[in-house]
Amino acid sequence: MTEPAVGAAMDARALVQSLQQETSGLGREAAEVRGVLDDSIRSAQRQQQAVSTLAQHLRAIVEAQDGIGHVTEHSLQAVGRAREAVEGVGHGVAGVVDTLREVADAAQQITQIAMQTRLVAFNASVEAKRAGEAGRGFAVVADAVKDLAARVEASSKQIMSTVGTLDERIGTLAREIRSDGSEGRQGTFHAALAEVESGVQRIAQAAAHSRQLSTGMNEEMALIERETAQTTQALQQALQRSESFLKLSERMMELTAASGIETEDTPYIQAAQQAASEIAQLLEEAVRSGAISLEDLFDEQYRPLPGTNPPQCETRFVALADRLFPQVQEKMLQLSPKVVFCIAVDRNGYVPTHNRKYCQPQRPGDVVWNTAHSRYRRIFNDRTGLASARNRRPFLLQTYRRDMGGGRFVLMKEVSAPIEVLGRHWGGLRLAYQF
Image 1 (cartoon, rainbow, N blue to C red):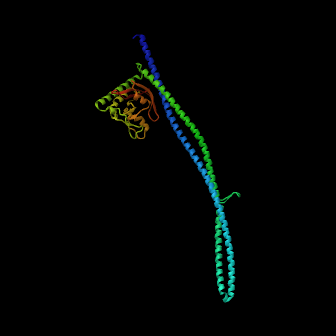
Image 2 (spheres, rainbow, N blue to C red; image 1 turned 180 degrees about the horizontal axis):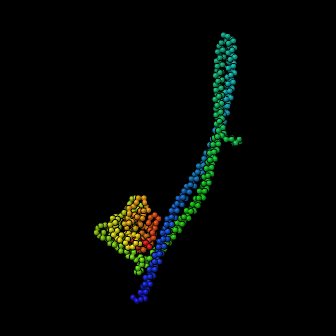
Image 3 (tube, rainbow, N blue to C red; image 1 turned 30 degrees about the horizontal axis):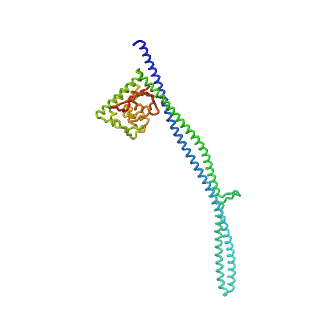
């Protein structure tokens, strides 16, 4: 090769390497932006749900206040009817008082008549005694009339006493239920009704004021709800645009890596392709030897494991994966200190067995710890996971943020290579490493 050709080759290599560094940085920023947008969307969705729930509560409050208004209106009507009824009773009581007074007057007249009768009978008895034997029979009659008059007088006085007591009690009752607007006096019962009426009116006024405030808040909440929905929609649109930006940066990284000039991603791409080939050979040998059927190897009946959070599940090929995959996956961790994990996944993003350090049994109730340390038997069908699982090109290079649990994220690159078993696409080999 001539000296100019060598110089040109070196310049091309330097250019590709520089481009790779630039696109790598671009991919890092794109992944970070997309991650922030994704977090913002989840936060906006939670806020939208909270605002929607609050708006529903406010509408329920307004409805309840309408109900209070109706109840207080009926209560005021009931108090009015009670007042009318009491006034009717008052008129009836006044009539009873008048009747009792008439009875008392009649009893007094009877008493006076009985006194006069007894006096006449006494005089007749005296005259009969003076008549001697001839007036004896008349004297007996006179004494009987005198005794009868005495009993009538006593009964009349008892009636007058009883009527007096009734008159006093009924008078007290009349005063209790009296409503004399002209004199500005009210009985106890009417005063109590007035207090009830006043209390109900205050409740009605407070409910009306509260309803007015709640209606205003409801309108404001509806506005906030619409604005939150618009914000979420805008973030979704921004996420879609950032997706295009991220795909462009990833495609540029792929093109530079596929240029034939070695870049910092080349060793990881070659390692991922080699690991995918080794996994494919192990699976093909297992099928040919009868260790597993092709149907079981491609099993998609993911059976949930009860009580797991995040959810885990099993398939008919997990035992085979536990036996075969670690010999390839663990070896890839020694490639570089930057390597974070190496896993084989089926075409739906299911991880039958992870690297040993991430295959820890779940701790009940500790979802943060489980998310970071118990990553096997799980389906990762997010953007990156599904793209890696279904990629059919020689390799796929992606950048993303990995959720480590507890709100901690790590920016990573990931190269994946397809795993083909007897001419069928089983899944992919995912090799993730830090920038």
